Amino acid sequence: MISEQYKKFLSYVIYQVYPRSFNDTNGDGIGDINGVIEKLDYLKELGVNAIWLCPCYKSPNDDNGYDIADYRDIMDEFGTLDDVKRLISEMHKRDMKLIMDLVPNHTSSEHEWFKQSRMSKDNPYSDYYYWFDEPQNDWQSCFCGSAWEYDEQRGQYYLHSYAPSQPDLNWENPKVVKEIQDVVDFWVDLGVDGFRCDVIDQISKDWERNLNCFGPQLHDHIHALFGRDKVRHIFTVGECWAGDIDEIVRHSAYERGELSTLFQFDHLACGCTTKFRKKPESLKSVRDIIAKWQTLNQERDLIHALFTDNHDNGRFISRMGNDGELRYESATCLAAMFYLLRGVPFIYQGQEFGLTNSHHHSIDEFDDIESVNIYKYFCESMTPEEAIDKINFGSRDNPRRPMSWTAGKNGGFSDAEPWMPLHSRYKEINLETDRNSEKSVFNFYREILKIRRENDAILYGDFEVISKQEDGNFVFTRTYEGKRFIVICNFEDESEISVETSGKIILSNYGRDAVSGTYRPYEVAIIEE
Image 1 (cartoon, rainbow, N blue to C red):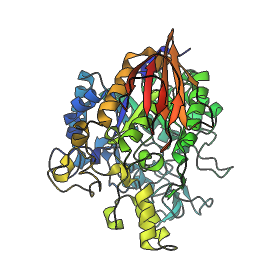
Image 2 (tube, rainbow, N blue to C red):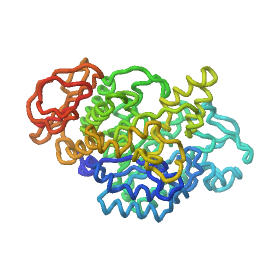
Image 3 (tube, one colour):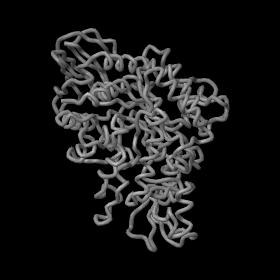
């Protein structure tokens, strides 16, 4: 039986905003908090009732805000703390929730805690980070190279799972746990409604098994953050690579007092051998993965996080769909495959009008530290042309480029030159052009979210797969209190399929009016029996 708290969360539709690239209102080429406020009515029209705001805290921006120098203040380029207070107020007026990005595993090396910690081995902050006389193992940074950095000032090595400017916090120190509790309380007191928790599985290290994640104190730490009475009501989603249902239960069963849900990333491994190497693969793989997790989460009364895109991966439509002549059909088919399931939808900016990967010819047109480092590595064994082709496919800059609001100057993002080059197809793929098109991805998204919002069978109903594993389609039902919907998604790129059913069509991306017959490539039909 779904708890009443989880029922409330199932009504959320969360839109992820990457603030640096969303909307610039002060003409400096960088998106800002006031730019988010300016677009709240647009998001409300789309059908969004919550925003996940990527980090906007004080930061030197070595990793685009995921290197935090002050958890209680705002990056100068984005505005002020008063702007965030106004954002919260304006959102709550519209019955919208604000989900902040919490980065508990590491800080910036410019954070005052680290500045103090590196000064000596016996000051109050000396054990806020992991310090050793020698590297403790062969752990590698996610951004290439050793995860251990020697600090001349302190004369010891410290651990950084990401860039050297992102030292890992030592959660074995109770003072660190209390510091992050206080950060959570600070934002909840301001009116924030929840948190997306960055790499939360890494806040406990497993030194015995030589893993920098899923350590023995992980669940104690998460419970210490979110199991307290003051914050039990907020929504929390963890970035956590939990691979089995029992571990997911330990993280997100309501009675555990830990997280509301987790992102499950299995489907993002489809269509590539590594993040930067594409491989041909059918959407059957994606269907089977999301159907598996949908079923397992349903059996345990858990919330499933429904998403295709985020700020860390190339656009899903370019990996697993058709981002060319069938871009509209493919984008809308993916929307139906994911957002008519039970769970909490997450929509990443630009996804709602079918934005694809971008294509650029020089590494100078990229900003992401991961992409720049891996490009140098690729160039050791391949030509620059081959290397840049892989970067174009997998770079985190694909979703981070400035929003394409219009086909006009700077894509309508800013009056000034944007902080990073625009999407290579912004004149073709932008919100204004899409909304005026007969084949509008935005209009389809708006309709599908309306159906979701107005039908308990979609919000809470049971899920059952009708299509067979060998089929090149995804046909499933959602049933609740005697009401039943059938969703048909043909994700064959070239082939047609035949489906016989009864009822009435309430939405189709091809304008279909007959429930039975032949379904074309990427055709979708939502049928109410």
